[in-house]
Amino acid sequence: MKQIDQKKDDPTRSGYAPAASRIYYGWIVVAACFLVIAPVMPLMLPAFGIFQVPILDEFHWDRGDFAIALSIHLVFSGLAAPVAGGLIDRFGPRRVMPIGALMTALALILMSRGSALWHFYVAFGLMAAAGSSLLQIVPLTTLVSNWFARHRGTAIGIVSAGTGAGQLALLPLVKLLIDQIGWRQTYLFFGLVILVIPTTLILLFLHTRPEDRGLSIEDESGRRRGRDEAGGGEPEQGNRGGRRTEAVILNKEWAEVDWTLGKASRTFRFWTLALVMTIFSAGMLLVSVQIVAYLGDKGYSSIIVASVLFLQGALNMVGEFFGGFLCDRIGREKTLTLSLLSFCASIVFLNLAGAVSTPTLVYVFTLFYGIGQGMVAPALMTSASDLFQGKHFGSILGVIFLGGYFGGAFGAWLGGRLFDLTGAYQVNFLISVLAMLISAALIWWVRPGSVRQMRSVETL
Image (tube, rainbow, N blue to C red):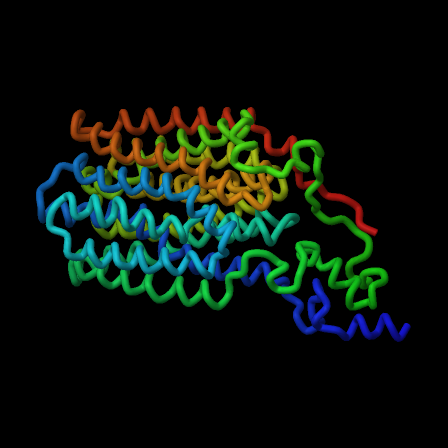
């Protein structure tokens, strides 16, 4: 008994979670990741459409020519994503991610001085892409996946919701600041924000794995802590009995593979999931970059446009939370299918809002668009993690995301070019809906749920 008490009271023992610490540190990592991505992602993609309007008004460039900056950004982000994931795998977030914050901040500051198309191609297309790739969903998903198994979908959903929270808080502010102080000073302001906030959070809170904090992924469920606090015996009474959701391995042979990029790239699931990323991203960017301009062309006031941006951020955040929750309850495939069907419905209502000028249709579009778009990220991220989780997951996820960035780059360019050619958006809408339906069909071929599945099981 004396030996048991000594172990119980030894706070340095590996895997020991102090009794005073009732919160699994993984949730602190999730909160920090949420706050890191919140200002970065919205400034890279959604805000591009807002800045586009005053920049084109000043320089009178074609939309298609200016959209090349976004296409370059997405392509280069895709090329940088595997590198970012690999660097996180090898060096950890504290050594890598502050460099990304510095590069992104410098890119925004340089854009505030832009006066030629090539300035935006270099600053936004190359520098901002390289920097933000170290701060966005690939490294953050890699990091969070190391900390969670049972609540992986929920944790990734919360981190993804940082994008929606950023849209909610930042996009109306971006629009307001542009109106008040101009687009140049607005870029300068947000450059300073990116320099300070992510860097501070990364250095204070982000650790690569539970072992870095003297923990184990078993501590996620509280069962290990319960045994430690009980002196190594049975868990506390609160952890006994009842039912709980657990990750159940259905394909043991697949799950036990030590996945490397080389091994993953020789599987159909790897390439099909990359294709889902590519097609979905192309379909989304065909529409999303043009929303602000589209509503303005159809005669909707700046107040309505600003309210749409605000609601999109709120609903996107709700969708990401809800999507992560659903991933752990009904599975990855069903969650992604529901999200893509919601996105298709939003396109229908957006088209109707252009034909029949009424704000009601605009807000119905916003509801389906915000929630549907938000649910996609946790479904895709958890699908990849379920299939290829391991010490090389960052590199694997980065290459899968390469397709998404390339597809988004093509969709962003094509959306602007189609408008220049047709003077309308209906072709964009049609192609976007087809892309969503194809993506929904492909995820059922990948079937991540046939490898790992969340099930409600009895506990002792």
